[in-house]
Length: 73
Image 1 (cartoon, rainbow, N blue to C red):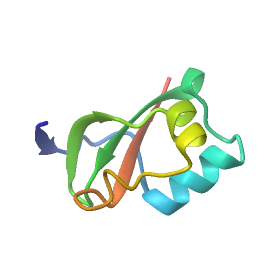
Image 2 (tube, rainbow, N blue to C red; image 1 turned 180 degrees about the vertical axis):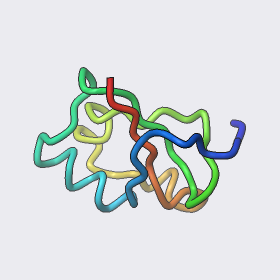
Image 3 (cartoon, rainbow, N blue to C red; image 1 turned 135 degrees about the vertical axis):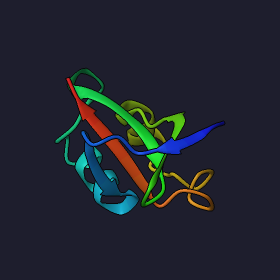
Image 4 (cartoon, helix red, strand yellow; image 1 turned 60 degrees about the horizontal axis):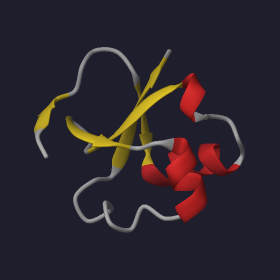
């Protein structure tokens, strides 16, 4: 895993906000790409809506990460 400064583009959501969007079908794998993040750093760990919808949990990541950075296509 690596962390780097967040870019000037993309949408930063808290994990609860993003999980609500996933459960409501607002975002899907075909809409873009997401990565786990902190408030100021971006990881290289993918946050795929389909995987999050199935697991309904981000528990393995919530210790380190508080956000998901979403990049629309």
